[in-house]
Amino acid sequence: MISKHAKKFQDTPLSILDLAPINEGETPVQSFQKSVALIQHAEQWGFNRYWVAEHHNMPGIASSATAVVIGHLAAATSHIRVGAGGVMLPNHSPLIVAEQFGTLASLFPNRIDLGLGRAPGTDPATAFALRRDLKTSAEAFPMLVNELEDYFSDEPISRVRAVPGQGTHVPIWLLGSSGFSAQLAAKKGLPFSFASHFAPAYLETALELYRDGFQPSDVLVKPYVMLGVNVVVADTSDHAAWLATSQQQQFLHLRRNQPTKLQPPIDDIDTHWSPIERAAVMQTLDSNYSLVGNPAEVKQGLEQILENTNADELIIQSQIFDQQARLHSYEIIAEWLE
Image 1 (cartoon, helix red, strand yellow):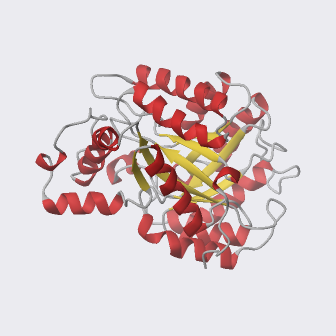
Image 2 (cartoon, one colour):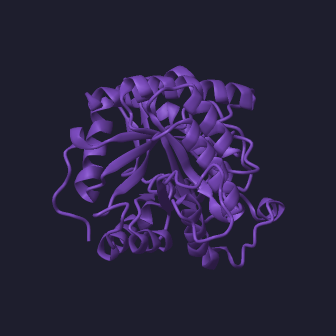
C-alpha cells in the first residue's frame, strides 16, 4: 500500500535519465556531445545521479553500448553518480557485466550504479541478433542477478573471478515496468526503480508488491523507490506543450513500429495521428507522470507524485529536441533543489 506520509519535495533527491537522443539531421557524435554538456550542468546544479539506458536498433537512441557511454560521462565529471538505467541483463553474460562495471567502479570509485532490467530493450529480430533466449529470459533473470552479485562479492562462490569486479560491491538496482522485478527486488532487499514514465498503469501495484514484500538485506534495511518521470518545463505552458510534441512523435512512431530519430517540435500534433493513436500515446504518457507546463505547473505535478507515492527519489527524463531548451528545462528543475 502507498504510504500516507508523503515526503517533502525539498528532501527528495532528483536525478536524470538520459536516453542519449539522436536528433533528426544529426549523428551519435552530436548526441554524446550534448550528453556531456548536460551531465556537466547536472553536476553543477546538484542532481543526484545520471543514468543512461541500453536500447538496440533504435535510430534515435545512442546508448546501446551503455558501459562505454557511462565511462565517457564519468570521465567528464568529478562527483555525480553515473550509471545504467539500465543494462538488460539477459542480453549479456553476467561475467562480462561484472568485468565492465567492476572496471568502471575501479576507475570512478563510489560513483557507479548498475540498474538491471530483464526486457530485451529492442525488437524480437534484434533480440535474436543479441543471441538472447526470449523463452527463458524471465525465468533466468533471478539466477543471472544472483550470479552477478556473486562476482561483485569479496569471496565469490564461483571458481571464476571477475577482474576487475570482485570486491567492488557495485550498487545493484532492479528496474521494472510490472510486478516481476518489484517482487524480486523486495525478496533480495534491493533498491527498485519503476518505469512510471512509460508504464504508469502498473505503478501502484508494483509499489505495493515491493513495499509489502520487502526483506531487509545487507544493502537496505527498508525499501527505496525511485520513479521515472517525463518532464518538459518551459517559461510558458504553450511553449512546453510545443516542445513536448517531439516526445509524442517518438512514442507514436514506436507504436507504429517505425522508430525514428528524435523529431523537431510541430505546431499541430493532431494532424500526425489518428484518434486511436492519440489515445494510446497519451495513455502511455499519462499526465500524472509525464509533466508538461510552466515551472509552477510542473513543480506542483512533482509534488503531487511524491504525495501520491512517497517515492524516495525521482529520475527525470526529458526528450526535448533543442539542446538549449533541454538544458533550460533541467535548470528550472534544479532551482527547486536549492
